Image (cartoon, rainbow over all chains, first blue to last red; front, side):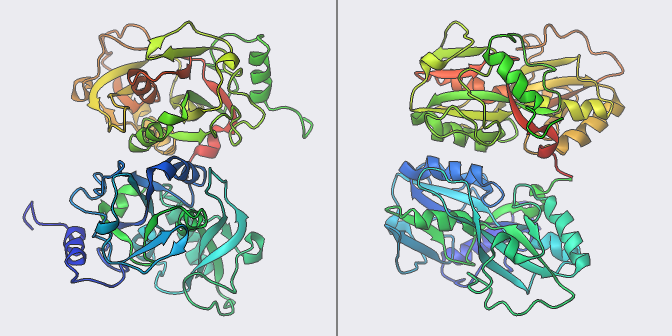
Length: 258
Length: 258
């Protein structure tokens, strides 16, 4: 490989930008950090950032762009956040609009973009440690309130994974090594303790009965700040569409502690 | 000890508030996190928080209070930031004013308080691991630029410690377990590599010649954001006076990763 060959993340973003790749970001650019994207007017940026700081396990902020700047200069200096997600969801006064593949025409000089860590960052490390990531995984609402900040509030949203006892112990250790990406689980065992809503999963399809050899584990989830921002009914709020995350040039391992 | 007996941190803050304790916070409330305090008008809070996010190693934000709220509800819910540091430094338009023991009369509804982690948080862990913390320690300017945000910019400020090779290895491992408090060193060895200014130390007194059995280690220092905020010449900026940190009720060990 030549020194100046593009990274896999850069090639994939170029394909997304050109419309050659339109599907989800799952499984793409193996080993590169994928981020939740949240874009809003600067007038709301302080309290959103404060909300993230107060709920750091759910909302690990990896980069915040200057107002009006669509380039994440640290995580992907050649990217453009207006075109490089395959799909965007847009909310106006809290009302969902049609999804888009490009938000250039909505761009304004006062828009601030937040890149927030995602649990899929440690999927790669899980797989290498023998913890499966391709099934038995849901995003669920809970009854646990987050710490509010300005207009942002709401209950914690979690990722639940079902693992064997042995995998659960490994997964706890491995995820603890990603303190800037949700870290260790926030709960293990009975979903009722945190009021996890198994009847109405946000993602992952219907939740069947728990097999006797599996343990439920719960991690704080990056959907939490998105949900808080939607509920705040901002005049304009843009996020990546579910499972169409922004792919950065940062290696997942660079976010790992010893 | 009764369940409702005050914590040592609470007793010490009460003494400070009552004027019975007027000296530095060094060595007080062993094992409790001490914080750098930075207070400014809300108009500057977004960019200051962004500066901290972009320079996280130097500026680990542990809590941000709502505008006008002098109570750090997470780190010390019974404290008052206007009275509970033994000494405050005040800057008006960047000009240093006389130090104060109480800032109640300067308080305004638009003031936002930032509590920023301090390197002394891991002193306790260092001591228990056999790494001395009571000498050979300086705060130095470097030639390394930080990432700017809005009006905040400047070079990185570091804490330099001189340790034996064995202690240096231990100190690197122990501090890496505090990713939310500066973490591992940013440099080991030749001070010239980071342009550390040994001739004009900010704290710690004159730097003598390096003994042959010692290695210099450099950690990102919480004085960095303070210095950036002073240079920005805000209309009002208040910090704890050097070595008169704010003592929280949080145990240092609770900020440690495995």
